[in-house]
Picture 1 (tube, rainbow, N blue to C red):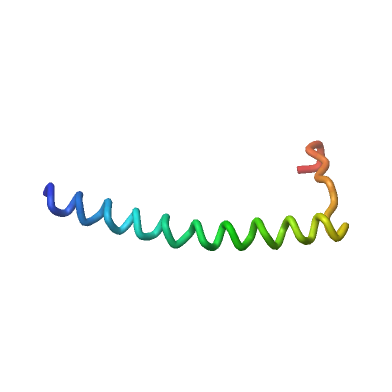
Picture 2: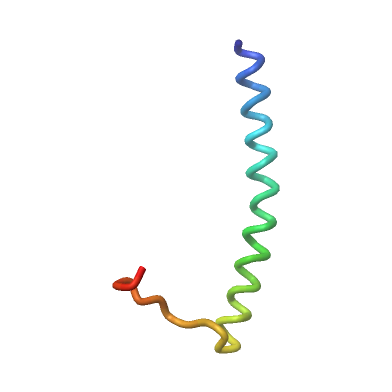
Length: 47
């Protein structure tokens, strides 16, 4: 049981580590689009 929990935690750590690279790339792309004027402000009332 403890070994399974440790293995599960290791898998989650690896998954989150991979997602950080994806999030950083998306952030960079979004910032570039925003600076180029390709984004629009969301209206919270229409969400």
